[in-house]
Length: 535
Image (cartoon, rainbow, N blue to C red; front, side, top):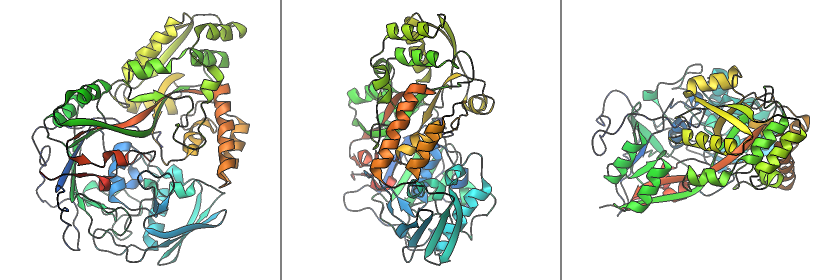
């Protein structure tokens, strides 16, 4: 989900230069080893190592405990799935699987490729796939993505090369779910069936293997010579260096201490780098990150749909994306990003341009006295360095209409999510979302079915029925029709308000190639497509 994803926490700032900048990269008793041949050397003209800098936080490297973006960006390179979404694609394709198909609406069967191995050299069989899925559901780690397997009823290792998955009900998104880290394959002879694997004992079968990990400082990878799949790496060694502050990350890319600065530089820093030269360029691509306002529709004053509609009528998304995000985001008029089939700008169709006069008429017709007092809440660092700027811009717009009086408060993520989701304390607050998989359902079901993951009190039987309909068919036209109807209801009932969708943006040094290729709706930074020209 992204309910618990979206972490933009910092780690330890870079203190030195190069590969050993924040952690000892020498061998020790931790980390992982391979049994097979040596790691492949770089191709002619390609550098041996690429260093990526990030302020993301890593919660866990075992898939059962990781639903945050920082963790999943590493996990997606370490482990292999039955299916994966190729760079630039929007449909699942075979990875560890040779083929997958529905044999009936509730039975999904995958045949494995021959000669699959983990980085340890041990064989990967259908028993490992069954173990991985069963383990995810059994452990049900509260920080993990196990809820994505809600439609899974049972898994059978039919033979060493065949996996049969039975579903509780028809689910057109199930192949997409198998591309997510919730279905990453782990070795059943190494990982515990009922406990999380330590970060220094990680074994996968993906394109890269983790050689050393120092929490909050550095992750060191090399190409997995045992990998058997479509995503062969170009760069022999890949290092992820973690920073506490975005300002330190900006300095590191300017000074050449990292080759790529990705997640998260501030919009102001990106603007400066875009115009600053120094051998650095800013690259961007399609993004599916969204930010939105959530209402607890059981709490005053937003229990009145007229108040929610009036807020939606006032908000100026163009001003937000220009003033706060400096063009690194674009206005969003549905919770479904524009890149997805079935996206519909329902809020634009329902409300048009920002118009305080129309908002006033909505409130007057409902008999609502003005100014309406609103208590807005946000979390100051979890969604990046400018969240306070976003909420101050919203306050400026709402109060500028003369219809609202807004007070703002903030708290850090751990307390914030408890107050918002578990206690229901907030009624007007900000959240964000990254995709679990690139399908419009992943931007509707989590928000619109029975209160959503945030339990905001909203429920609509028509929405639930439409969600069931689109999940029960693989007919693209029928699914898109259902998506459109749900988005229209979203704009009519306003249980939330979409604000913007972000581009994926990175600063890269001269000679770095492939970063733009990995920027697509799947939101996975694929180490294997990135390379750097040798000096």
